[in-house]
Amino acid sequence: MPSGRRSVQRRSGRQAADRDRPVPWDIIYYKTPDGIAPALEFLDQCPGSLDAQFTAVLDSVAAAPPPQFSGGGKWEAMHGTMGGFYEIRLSGPRREQFRLYCLLENGTMEELAKRGLQRPAIAVITGMRKPWRTTFSEGDYRRVRELGTEHQQQHPRRIAT
Amino acid sequence: MDAVDVSLHERRRAQRMQDPEYRAAYERAARELAQTDAVIRELDLLRADLGISKAELARRVNRNASSVRRLFTASQARPELPLIVALADALGAEVRVVPRVAKERQPVRGPSGRRRVAATV
Image (cartoon, rainbow over all chains, first blue to last red; front, side, top):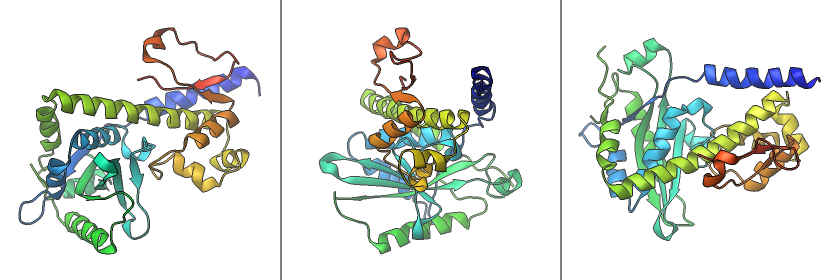
Protein backbone atom coordinates (compact mmCIF):
# COMPACT_ATOMS: atom_id res chain seq x y z
CA MET A 1 0.00 0.00 0.00
CA PRO A 2 1.41 3.45 -0.85
CA SER A 3 2.53 5.31 2.24
CA GLY A 4 0.44 8.32 1.28
CA ARG A 5 -2.73 6.30 1.30
CA ARG A 6 -1.84 4.72 4.63
CA SER A 7 -1.21 8.11 6.20
CA VAL A 8 -4.58 9.33 4.95
CA GLN A 9 -6.22 6.29 6.52
CA ARG A 10 -4.36 6.88 9.77
CA ARG A 11 -5.43 10.51 9.91
CA SER A 12 -9.01 9.65 9.10
CA GLY A 13 -9.13 7.02 11.84
CA ARG A 14 -7.86 9.43 14.45
CA GLN A 15 -10.05 12.28 13.23
CA ALA A 16 -13.06 9.99 13.41
CA ALA A 17 -12.13 9.01 16.96
CA ASP A 18 -11.90 12.69 17.95
CA ARG A 19 -15.04 13.67 16.07
CA ASP A 20 -17.12 10.88 17.56
CA ARG A 21 -16.02 11.49 21.12
CA PRO A 22 -19.27 11.81 23.09
CA VAL A 23 -20.00 13.95 26.11
CA PRO A 24 -18.94 12.69 29.54
CA TRP A 25 -21.39 10.57 31.47
CA ASP A 26 -22.87 11.51 34.83
CA ILE A 27 -21.97 9.62 38.01
CA ILE A 28 -24.80 8.78 40.37
CA TYR A 29 -24.99 6.86 43.67
CA TYR A 30 -27.80 4.37 44.32
CA LYS A 31 -29.80 5.02 47.48
CA THR A 32 -31.71 2.29 49.36
CA PRO A 33 -35.37 2.71 50.40
CA ASP A 34 -34.20 3.72 53.89
CA GLY A 35 -32.01 6.49 52.53
CA ILE A 36 -28.57 4.86 52.70
CA ALA A 37 -26.13 5.13 49.80
CA PRO A 38 -24.08 1.91 50.22
CA ALA A 39 -21.35 3.03 47.82
CA LEU A 40 -20.84 6.33 49.63
CA GLU A 41 -20.70 4.54 52.99
CA PHE A 42 -18.12 2.19 51.51
CA LEU A 43 -16.03 5.03 50.08
CA ASP A 44 -16.17 6.96 53.35
CA GLN A 45 -14.79 3.92 55.18
CA CYS A 46 -11.96 3.21 52.73
CA PRO A 47 -8.52 3.70 54.29
CA GLY A 48 -5.87 6.12 53.05
CA SER A 49 -6.15 7.38 49.52
CA LEU A 50 -8.52 4.72 48.20
CA ASP A 51 -11.51 7.08 48.08
CA ALA A 52 -9.47 9.46 45.92
CA GLN A 53 -8.38 6.61 43.66
CA PHE A 54 -11.91 5.27 43.23
CA THR A 55 -13.11 8.78 42.40
CA ALA A 56 -10.33 9.19 39.84
CA VAL A 57 -11.31 5.94 38.15
CA LEU A 58 -14.98 6.92 38.07
CA ASP A 59 -14.11 10.30 36.56
CA SER A 60 -11.81 8.72 33.96
CA VAL A 61 -14.45 6.21 32.93
CA ALA A 62 -17.18 8.85 32.80
CA ALA A 63 -15.00 11.10 30.68
CA ALA A 64 -14.04 8.36 28.21
CA PRO A 65 -16.99 7.35 28.40
CA PRO A 66 -17.45 3.64 29.27
CA PRO A 67 -17.96 2.03 25.84
CA GLN A 68 -14.69 3.56 24.60
CA PHE A 69 -12.68 3.16 27.79
CA SER A 70 -10.13 0.35 27.80
CA GLY A 71 -10.31 0.14 31.54
CA GLY A 72 -7.02 1.75 32.34
CA GLY A 73 -6.12 -1.28 34.39
CA LYS A 74 -8.73 -0.64 37.07
CA TRP A 75 -12.18 -0.89 35.47
CA GLU A 76 -13.43 -4.31 34.43
CA ALA A 77 -16.63 -5.73 32.96
CA MET A 78 -17.90 -8.59 35.10
CA HIS A 79 -19.14 -11.89 33.73
CA GLY A 80 -21.23 -14.89 34.71
CA THR A 81 -23.79 -14.22 37.40
CA MET A 82 -22.45 -10.65 37.68
CA GLY A 83 -22.85 -9.94 33.98
CA GLY A 84 -23.94 -6.35 33.39
CA PHE A 85 -21.95 -5.05 36.35
CA TYR A 86 -18.59 -3.32 36.12
CA GLU A 87 -16.14 -3.31 39.00
CA ILE A 88 -13.34 -1.00 39.99
CA ARG A 89 -10.52 -3.01 41.55
CA LEU A 90 -8.05 -1.46 43.94
CA SER A 91 -5.57 -2.76 46.49
CA GLY A 92 -5.22 -1.15 49.88
CA PRO A 93 -2.89 -1.49 52.86
CA ARG A 94 -1.60 -5.05 53.45
CA ARG A 95 -2.95 -5.91 49.99
CA GLU A 96 -6.52 -5.79 51.20
CA GLN A 97 -8.77 -5.81 48.13
CA PHE A 98 -11.41 -3.16 47.53
CA ARG A 99 -14.14 -3.36 44.89
CA LEU A 100 -16.73 -0.85 43.78
CA TYR A 101 -19.69 -2.18 41.75
CA CYS A 102 -21.32 -0.11 39.04
CA LEU A 103 -24.04 -0.36 36.42
CA LEU A 104 -24.20 1.61 33.20
CA GLU A 105 -27.25 3.75 32.58
CA ASN A 106 -27.45 4.00 28.82
CA GLY A 107 -30.25 4.02 26.28
CA THR A 108 -32.33 6.33 24.16
CA MET A 109 -33.07 9.80 25.45
CA GLU A 110 -36.62 8.64 26.09
CA GLU A 111 -35.43 5.68 28.16
CA LEU A 112 -33.04 7.86 30.11
CA ALA A 113 -35.75 10.44 30.74
CA LYS A 114 -37.94 7.73 32.30
CA ARG A 115 -35.11 7.12 34.75
CA GLY A 116 -34.85 10.85 35.48
CA LEU A 117 -31.55 11.13 33.65
CA GLN A 118 -30.60 13.72 31.06
CA ARG A 119 -27.62 11.79 29.74
CA PRO A 120 -26.02 8.36 30.23
CA ALA A 121 -24.58 7.73 33.67
CA ILE A 122 -22.48 5.38 35.75
CA ALA A 123 -24.62 4.18 38.65
CA VAL A 124 -22.40 3.34 41.60
CA ILE A 125 -24.25 0.67 43.54
CA THR A 126 -22.09 -0.55 46.43
CA GLY A 127 -18.61 -1.64 47.42
CA MET A 128 -16.98 -4.57 49.19
CA ARG A 129 -13.56 -5.36 50.65
CA LYS A 130 -11.76 -8.61 51.38
CA PRO A 131 -8.35 -9.77 52.59
CA TRP A 132 -5.78 -10.65 49.96
CA ARG A 133 -6.10 -14.12 48.45
CA THR A 134 -9.67 -14.61 49.60
CA THR A 135 -12.85 -14.61 47.54
CA PHE A 136 -16.26 -13.10 47.92
CA SER A 137 -19.04 -15.62 48.46
CA GLU A 138 -21.93 -16.09 46.09
CA GLY A 139 -24.04 -14.58 48.86
CA ASP A 140 -21.90 -11.42 48.75
CA TYR A 141 -22.41 -11.13 45.00
CA ARG A 142 -26.12 -11.90 45.35
CA ARG A 143 -26.44 -8.94 47.70
CA VAL A 144 -24.77 -6.69 45.12
CA ARG A 145 -27.11 -7.96 42.42
CA GLU A 146 -30.14 -7.38 44.63
CA LEU A 147 -29.14 -3.77 45.18
CA GLY A 148 -28.55 -3.33 41.45
CA THR A 149 -31.93 -4.83 40.61
CA GLU A 150 -33.61 -2.61 43.18
CA HIS A 151 -31.89 0.40 41.63
CA GLN A 152 -33.00 -0.50 38.13
CA GLN A 153 -36.62 -0.91 39.23
CA GLN A 154 -36.85 2.74 40.27
CA HIS A 155 -38.35 5.24 37.81
CA PRO A 156 -37.03 7.82 38.29
CA ARG A 157 -33.87 6.48 39.86
CA ARG A 158 -33.58 6.90 43.62
CA ILE A 159 -30.10 8.33 44.11
CA ALA A 160 -28.12 10.14 46.77
CA THR A 161 -28.30 13.91 46.38
CA MET B 1 -40.58 13.28 34.19
CA ASP B 2 -38.37 15.65 36.21
CA ALA B 3 -34.63 15.04 36.07
CA VAL B 4 -32.96 13.80 39.22
CA ASP B 5 -30.17 15.84 40.81
CA VAL B 6 -26.91 14.23 39.69
CA SER B 7 -24.55 16.85 41.12
CA LEU B 8 -23.54 14.99 44.29
CA HIS B 9 -20.44 13.39 42.77
CA GLU B 10 -19.09 16.76 41.59
CA ARG B 11 -19.80 18.41 44.93
CA ARG B 12 -18.30 15.54 46.90
CA ARG B 13 -15.12 15.54 44.82
CA ALA B 14 -14.76 19.33 45.02
CA GLN B 15 -15.07 19.21 48.78
CA ARG B 16 -12.54 16.41 49.18
CA MET B 17 -10.06 17.94 46.73
CA GLN B 18 -9.49 20.70 49.26
CA ASP B 19 -7.41 18.13 51.16
CA PRO B 20 -3.91 18.23 49.56
CA GLU B 21 -3.32 14.52 50.25
CA TYR B 22 -6.61 13.58 48.63
CA ARG B 23 -5.86 15.80 45.64
CA ALA B 24 -2.39 14.32 45.20
CA ALA B 25 -3.74 10.75 45.34
CA TYR B 26 -6.53 11.62 42.91
CA GLU B 27 -4.18 13.24 40.41
CA ARG B 28 -1.67 10.40 40.63
CA ALA B 29 -4.39 7.81 40.01
CA ALA B 30 -5.80 9.85 37.13
CA ARG B 31 -2.36 10.07 35.49
CA GLU B 32 -1.83 6.32 35.79
CA LEU B 33 -5.22 5.57 34.30
CA ALA B 34 -4.73 8.03 31.46
CA GLN B 35 -1.36 6.55 30.57
CA THR B 36 -2.60 2.98 30.59
CA ASP B 37 -5.66 3.91 28.57
CA ALA B 38 -3.58 6.00 26.15
CA VAL B 39 -1.22 3.08 25.41
CA ILE B 40 -4.09 0.68 24.80
CA ARG B 41 -6.01 3.18 22.67
CA GLU B 42 -2.88 3.94 20.65
CA LEU B 43 -2.35 0.26 19.97
CA ASP B 44 -5.98 -0.14 18.90
CA LEU B 45 -5.83 2.91 16.64
CA LEU B 46 -2.60 1.64 15.12
CA ARG B 47 -4.23 -1.74 14.56
CA ALA B 48 -7.23 -0.11 12.88
CA ASP B 49 -5.01 2.18 10.81
CA LEU B 50 -3.15 -0.85 9.50
CA GLY B 51 -6.41 -2.64 8.72
CA ILE B 52 -5.61 -5.59 10.98
CA SER B 53 -8.47 -7.33 12.79
CA LYS B 54 -8.17 -8.16 16.47
CA ALA B 55 -8.25 -11.84 15.57
CA GLU B 56 -5.43 -11.44 13.07
CA LEU B 57 -3.40 -9.42 15.57
CA ALA B 58 -3.93 -12.15 18.16
CA ARG B 59 -2.75 -14.75 15.66
CA ARG B 60 0.42 -12.74 15.00
CA VAL B 61 1.35 -12.78 18.69
CA ASN B 62 0.21 -16.36 19.29
CA ARG B 63 -2.62 -15.38 21.61
CA ASN B 64 -6.29 -16.19 21.76
CA ALA B 65 -8.46 -13.67 19.98
CA SER B 66 -10.41 -13.24 23.21
CA SER B 67 -7.34 -12.05 25.12
CA VAL B 68 -6.69 -9.31 22.57
CA ARG B 69 -10.37 -8.40 22.39
CA ARG B 70 -10.47 -8.15 26.20
CA LEU B 71 -7.49 -5.84 26.20
CA PHE B 72 -9.20 -3.34 23.90
CA THR B 73 -12.43 -3.32 25.88
CA ALA B 74 -13.17 -2.91 29.55
CA SER B 75 -13.00 -6.64 30.08
CA GLN B 76 -9.55 -6.94 31.55
CA ALA B 77 -8.59 -5.02 34.64
CA ARG B 78 -4.89 -5.85 34.52
CA PRO B 79 -3.30 -5.49 31.11
CA GLU B 80 -0.16 -7.62 30.92
CA LEU B 81 2.98 -5.75 29.91
CA PRO B 82 4.35 -8.70 27.87
CA LEU B 83 1.14 -8.72 25.82
CA ILE B 84 1.29 -4.95 25.33
CA VAL B 85 4.90 -5.20 24.16
CA ALA B 86 4.13 -8.13 21.85
CA LEU B 87 1.22 -6.29 20.27
CA ALA B 88 3.27 -3.16 19.77
CA ASP B 89 5.99 -5.19 18.10
CA ALA B 90 3.48 -6.94 15.84
CA LEU B 91 2.20 -3.51 14.80
CA GLY B 92 5.70 -2.23 14.02
CA ALA B 93 5.83 -0.09 17.14
CA GLU B 94 7.54 -0.19 20.49
CA VAL B 95 6.75 0.74 24.08
CA ARG B 96 8.96 3.33 25.75
CA VAL B 97 9.11 4.96 29.16
CA VAL B 98 9.57 8.67 28.63
CA PRO B 99 10.55 10.95 31.55
CA ARG B 100 8.00 13.72 31.84
CA VAL B 101 10.70 16.41 31.87
CA ALA B 102 11.90 15.18 28.48
CA LYS B 103 8.42 15.31 26.97
CA GLU B 104 9.08 18.56 25.11
CA ARG B 105 12.05 17.19 23.21
CA GLN B 106 10.62 13.71 22.58
CA PRO B 107 11.24 12.70 18.95
CA VAL B 108 8.34 11.35 16.96
CA ARG B 109 10.19 8.14 16.16
CA GLY B 110 12.67 6.07 18.06
CA PRO B 111 16.23 5.43 16.87
CA SER B 112 15.06 2.33 15.05
CA GLY B 113 12.53 4.33 13.11
CA ARG B 114 9.69 2.41 14.72
CA ARG B 115 6.64 4.17 16.01
CA ARG B 116 6.56 4.68 19.73
CA VAL B 117 3.63 3.73 21.86
CA ALA B 118 4.23 5.95 24.83
CA ALA B 119 2.07 8.00 27.15
CA THR B 120 3.31 11.06 28.97
CA VAL B 121 0.46 12.82 30.69
